[in-house]
Structures are given as C-alpha cells and as structure tokens.
Image 1 (spheres, rainbow, N blue to C red):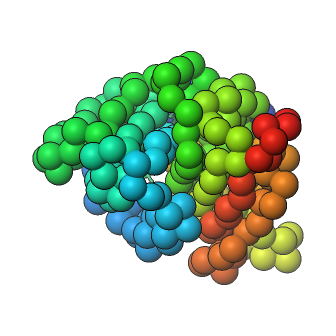
Image 2: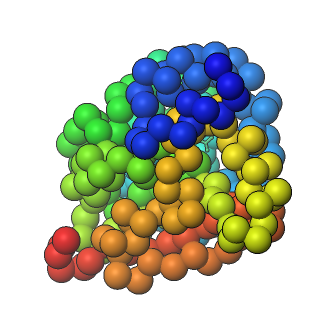
Length: 221
Ligand SMILES: C[S@@+](CC[C@H](N)C(=O)[O-])C[C@H]1O[C@@H](n2cnc3c(N)ncnc32)[C@H](O)[C@@H]1O
C-alpha cells in the first residue's frame, strides 16, 4: 500500500492498530525513547499524589506506570488500559520488575474498559486514536471523579504555512496512529469536557503538545 494512505481513514481502526502494535511492540521502547522528555513533563503536570487513583489510558508498554505507581504509593492505585496484547505484556513485565503491587493493566480497548474505580487523575500520553473516539473518551471520563485532573500529550499539526514540518510529523507518526483525523486539535473531546482546558507547552516547532484541565467539579457534561 502507498505509505500513509491508510492513515487517511476517517476514524481509528482497531484491527489496523492491533496489527501495527503487534509488529512494533518488541522495539517500541527503543524507538520511542525520544518521547521521554514529553512523558516526564506530562507526569509533572499530572502531579499524582499519595493515595490517588490514576488511569493511564493507552499505556502501551507501560513507560509511565512505575513512576505513577511510586507517586500514588501503597494506598493508591494505577490502572493502565491498553488494547494491544503484546504491548500490555511488556507493561506487565515492567510493573513486575519494579515490584509494584498497586499497578494493574487492563488489556482491553478504552471503549470497553470498565474498572471499578473513581479516578482522581487521567493521563492520555500519545493516545491519539483514543482521543479521536467519542465512545472511548466518554467511557474513560465516566470513571473519573467530578473535578478530576486530565492531562494529554501528543502529536499535532501546525498551520498550513508549515507544510514541510507537518508532512514530516505525519510521516513520523504514521505507524503509531491509525487516523490523521483530528491532528489539528487532537484533544478537542477533552477540551469540551474540561472548562479550564489549556495547552501549557509545545515542542518540536509546535508539533507536540502538552495540555491540562479539570472535569467540571459539579459533574456537568
Ligand atoms: C503511541 S502508543 C503510546 C503508549 C504510551 N502511552 C507511551 O507513552 O509510550 C499508543 C498506544 O495506544 C494503544 N491504543 C490505541 N487505541 C487504543 C484503544 N482504543 N484503547 C486502548 N489502547 C489503545 C496502542 O495499542 C498503543 O499501545
């Protein structure tokens, strides 16, 4: 197939994502080390506290899980949600190696995950496909407390004047997301639900963003 043609689809494609991450899983950590600075910043912004319940949506190979697990401590809980079995297996191994008992991984699509918790904080780190699904975002926010902190980090496109930069970004992202749809405003579904939603930082000429907000404290939608 012509490279990137599949990514022009109108919405995320689960079979395509599963196949892609099954292929990528073994080398994912090595190939995505460049995300570490953005991940660190996202963790700082999320500011998970002792005793809290945190959801890491589309946790992948679990890069954030040990830090989150340590931050919430033995009285807190971290739940990683990841649909790709190969990625979830690496995440489980990572958590076991870190000796953390308070971190659980649910191997299911975000649309179907039903953990029996009320989350204090939710992280979407490079989870573009999830953010483009009304169903997935609605389901995840349903398990959050009113007023919960929500942080998103990921790829985005900038203005038309930066066409070469945008093209480079699309090329670089092509295996990691199944639709380019929504890349101009990737977290719009979260912004609609968080009255104070704001982008706090950008990187790589604006093609990566970091944003934060809080769900309505009264639980209004
Ligand atoms: C770019 S990776 C990011 C992983 C991780 N958050 C990180 O920082 O490395 C995107 C992940 O989203 C997962 N994913 C895609 N769609 C999903 C969905 N609907 N539900 C759960 N996981 C999903 C993929 O399997 C993949 O592991």
